[in-house]
Amino acid sequence: MGKYSEHILSKLKENKNYYSMDDNSNIERCQTDEHFLGECILVNENLIWHSVHKYIGKPELLTKNHCVEKDDILQLGRLGFLKAVKAFDTSRGVKFSSFAVTAIVREIRCFLRDSASIIRPTRTATDLIHRINRLEHDMGYLPVAHEIAFLLDEEEDKVNKALQVGKGVKYLDEPVGADDQHHQSVTLMDTIFSGEDMEANVLDKMYVDAVLDSVKRKLSEQEVTVLKHRVDGLNQTQTADLEDISQMRVSRIMRKVAKMLDQSNKMYMKNDNR
Figure (cartoon, rainbow, N blue to C red):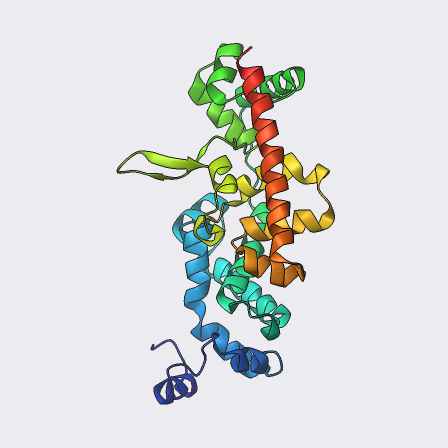
């Protein structure tokens, strides 16, 4: 609490919910009162760090892997929070925290994607990346790492590193959120097909990109937007509210995506069994 000004501390002492973003009147005030908005952002920084830890990664690893300062991450999170406040419609009945998490995560991920330092692979790694690209082109799809290693007569560990540096590839059958104790996990495909609340299973950027890239060419703009909302953490009701469509429409779109991914997976399995 010591990091706040005396003014903020006095308001919190009078009413601990004075800056609560669960109160729509506070959000509406933020949209017209810049000073109050600034104070709300400071008091609600825990929402920013919660979003970072849960959906992006530990700040310490982000600063190490992407050469960014922790303060930069915080500033980006604040910018996402601000954008969420400006865009939030209190009449839709959507919980602000769910809406804000999406804006915060998107702001930080976009920065990390566009501004992170460039990784320069070695000549050997570059050659392996080119060979993997040619293999993918010749086969019409990208085999899993151990198959690539067998086909190219390379060590699987080297193939995995080349994939990570060259493309950041993630497979639909790769695990999401493995349980270290029981060695169990669900795959991206399982998560998309299940009826589980997507808020509890928000996928990181590479998984999201893998899904979108595999289906977005066959979807309308609205269908792509709905899919993005779902994998960004919004549930069916929130997605319907944001897009001003029925929940039935959201459900039909997700079933369409699931069917497309299922067909893609069956085609992959057919090729895999040859």
